Length: 164
Image (cartoon, rainbow, N blue to C red; front, side, top):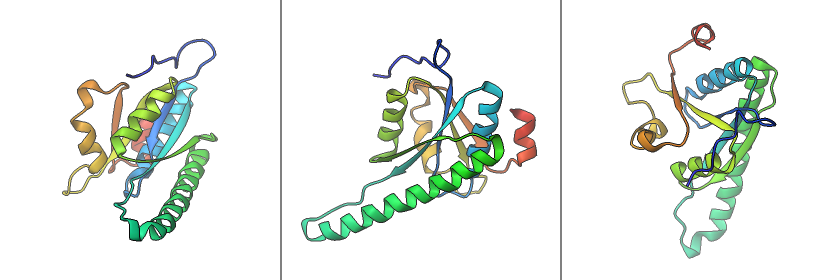
């Protein structure tokens, strides 16, 4: 069950949730969310999801090393994205790293933070499709707890500026 949204209640401010992944278009979502934060007087929450690998008993030591490497990579990705957001809007976004299935973690983060007002994702402009998270989310849009904004990966900074 999703908690009540409090983003516009006294003492709260709206936040935009952005998933920072390894796609080529993650920057478009960060750019849009940062511009939105300026306009809405809100904040940005950046989420990096580490999807767990299959593990067997004999590979647990290797799995621990892989988990540590994934954590380092997640922090580096969030550093890049936070630097970009700061350069765009002079903001310091909140950073969240979660491990687990993408949709499950996305919904958990939204449920745990009642100030999240919307989710922003960027879609790949390529022929291979919009990307795995956008495709996965398409099946849940009718019941999703917050509005979802999907930004085309083909939009320039100037195009986004004219929209937000």
